[in-house]
Image 1 (cartoon, rainbow, N blue to C red):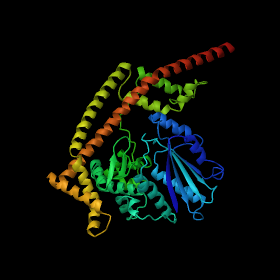
Image 2 (image 1 turned 60 degrees about the horizontal axis):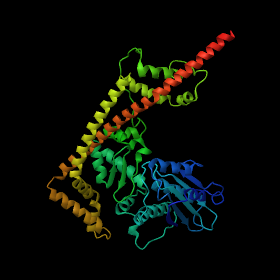
Image 3 (image 1 turned 120 degrees about the horizontal axis):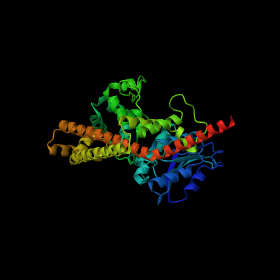
Length: 468
């Protein structure tokens, strides 16, 4: 049995970390764990996250305590439960965990940064989030490990309806539930837009951006399954929808096969401008021909050897786009900015179109996601009143609109597919601009490194000549 409580802290972040990781309480630091931060650097990395996101004020951290019934659990199991809790509930947060054994009852302390390192958003703790997430996850983990739980007078508050419905189907964790629903939607989808529609109809809200995020209606935070499995990135989902899911899952083919476009053989031209500079620089780094490293490198050049793949990518970018002079670079940046402007305008029009229909799209998703609640309500199951009312409102809104549901589904899938494609193109154009900026910043440094290296080699040759 675990009793949980959460304590918000406006200060004392370092003191809280030191308390949790106290070696006298954690059997010499054996019963400790870290997520998204390195041992010994916890405080510095959390403060760095706050500085980078500009969220240094007010809430500094949160402190969750899990206390277990004496004699019911071992310290190792208590630590495993705390780690499982942090992995599920605190995705993206920097977390330190310590299971303390200095009292007659074993208890775990979980201290985490108030700012999410991935999203830059602050954690928000409410009574609802405590019962629906912290308490619900902790109780479920206890049940999975054969531990007792506290029975409340109103068990319906512990988890949301949709969460309870999924648990009743034998899917105990949200992560496994999400991945199962993602695979089902991939198998049933005709294209990416249809996939998003199916996920919404399963009761999920979707975050479109650099990463695809999913959460059940009523949850506070998105889960980003693509961080752990590339199959669930936007490109991975698109590839799997095209009929490759079984081969990908069987390991017979990669999620995103890297196949460069076929090019006819051509002799290497005599490069000039930026291209010549990059060829010379990669030559000095020992990554072209069979040349070894120069006898002596500048400190910056030694560091550059570690990043040679990035330089190769920049060189390929310059060659593919025929950029050799600063004027070519400026023209390319201008064209890219114009393309970004057109794409942004196109995305705005699509978002306006989506916003006009948003109430109908939401009603369409609610009607399908809450269909089981209608059947349960009509069978006389109590506690389904709110879900049934929401279902009826959605059905009425769809009927009053006069738009056939099949046509609305098709329209919604098309809008989502177009938005996804526009977002993909915008990301690609922004990556090009980022490469342009990097090249403009690095070329003066590369020229200096080349000059210093050549001067040093000249000195070495002169010294050898004098010795002879």
